[in-house]
Length: 471
Image 1 (tube, rainbow, N blue to C red):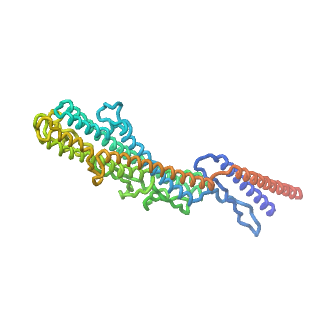
Image 2: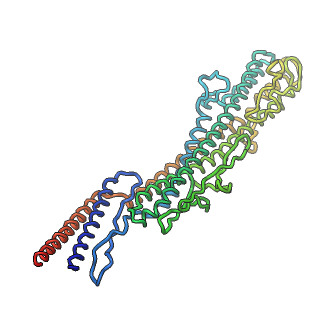
């Protein structure tokens, strides 16, 4: 009887194992189109023998099919892609600041228009110097002086609008930085929660931990798009997450990310820190790195270039203008307020706003003398930048060109990175993805094995009946 009992137990174990195999194959097929799903595999092992005889089969685990090296490569490339994608979007905004209409009409005060329209900063500079040329042609004209005053005001407002919009872009990036830090912390919390459940699911006999691990790894992948991270899987199935060598997740313990606000120029910007200690973390990838790079390096460079242009314009125009005489015979008047030497602060001297007769054309106060007006007009030809090789208009044109070049290079790098990321994802899907044909074949194998196991149980049952009838 003990032999028959052992045989029926072997049959029962085979039935259970094949049932699990059928369930796993069916689950794989059901999730063939589920994003982030890893193909499952039932691990079948021989049961411990008794008295030298086999005791059947058992399922020790339902594991995921993964390649940890490919996973690490995908996460690394995610960080590179996230950085470039964020930078490309930021550059699109900055290009718009320099090239798109900022107002509804060419007459709107302070509007920043494209260079090609003739009413952007380049156009404003050109019209300003043209107005002094018109004054040189008619040095006694009051209407020409009124035009100079208006063009000077529009030029100052254009500088201010550019400065405002670039700083607004910087502020928007700072807000996005804060939002993404909060998003990263939410992901870390959920990763820690899932981490805590994995060991009990894997080793506690409650079933497979594969669904939890898939969810956790998908969250880690989302995190890798925000901030560069590395991971290490532990023996108990949990994953330790690192950033800059600092542990962010260890089993269920989570170290949240924080922000330290620093003032740079007129802007308040955040630095990524470990919230518990305030220790600064170094960003090398992810969208947070892209934000940091544009917010803290590129935009300040553009603002500095605009300030340099405004400062040179104020200094050079005032130097020429203050040496001349207005219609009222007064000399020594600055055209621009001497205190306003940045793109934000440049403005026409309030005395000239009140009295255009102070606008100088003559070098000696004599009627018909136009030398100072010509000198101011000719400033457009003076090579005052880049070691005496660029005029003001060329300097600004180079700035706009630099923005465009950086945007184009970033877009090109982004597209190249997109291809690399897609290739890696395809390689990973070949490993972890579900093949419907393969799973259908597995179903047939498990079905036949189940039928054979059922036949074992039936035969042993018949043998039991025979033994009972003999008694």
